[in-house]
Amino acid sequence: MRRFAQVGLLALAGLGLLRTSLLTDEYLRFVKEGMRPLLIVSGVLLIGLAAAEARPGRRHGGDAHAHGDDHGSPGSGSGSGSGSGDDHDPGPAGAHGRADGHADGDGDGRKAGDGDGGHGHGHDHSRVPRVAWLLFLPVLSLLFYAPPALGSYTASREPAKAVAVQEDDFDPLPRETPLPITLTGFTQRVQQDRSRAIRGRTLRMTGFVTSAGGGGWYLTRIVISCCAADSTTLKVRVYGVAAPETDTWVTVDGTWHPGGTLGTPSAAVAVDARAVTAVAKPSNAYMDAVPLTG
Image 1: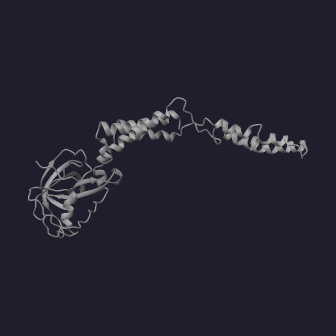
Image 2 (image 1 turned 180 degrees about the vertical axis):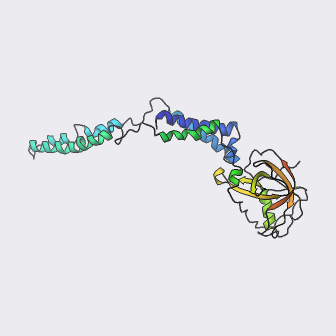
Image 3 (image 1 turned 135 degrees about the vertical axis):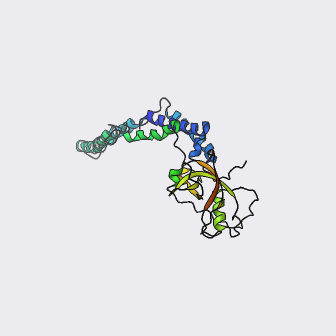
């Protein structure tokens, strides 16, 4: 790739990272909040590399001529071969020496030099492959258009995450009503809590709407461990209320929807909704957080 293109790509990538992580919260669409310092450092380093690459006088392949000329210098093996005539006939030995020397240096070396000394291996490296310019598209998107956060499109194509098994006994549930709970906590209580403390309790959960087919819908959360590439999906089936618009963030108040045996893996991860309220999308939508009350 040409030098100006390399410098431009590094600089734009650095500026895009700094804009996304310093001036906006768009980075939360791709990584967790704790990754922000690393994004800032990466942006600064990329800009620093671009500045170093753009320094005047910095050249690539500056020693190519010297490297190519070493093989073809007239004082290489041919000179010493023709000059040592003590034990050999100067004529034939000299001719033999020049033949060997030029075969290695000027013969094969010249051919290699046409590829080597011509700054390539038979083709021109100075031209940028057309496909390389596509590298600018994701870089420019960081500056002018950040891709949207993961939502219903991703969630509808992934099965619900199997939550971790609760090894210890469950703590008693607070007496608060409605009881704020995460989708993970609800799933664990429904399928693992043999005390069945969740039966009849009014619960409150927050997530976004995804379609369940047949007019049904899920309350959904997408959770990431590091970045959007390792995302997993949590889903709770909602009954009793018509589906709001897909990708709308809502808070659902309701009770466990009977299905299977409560406290065992056969229990349905579902609620009978009593109220559904539209809410603003949280700043960090990739956390399975307890909904705020008030």
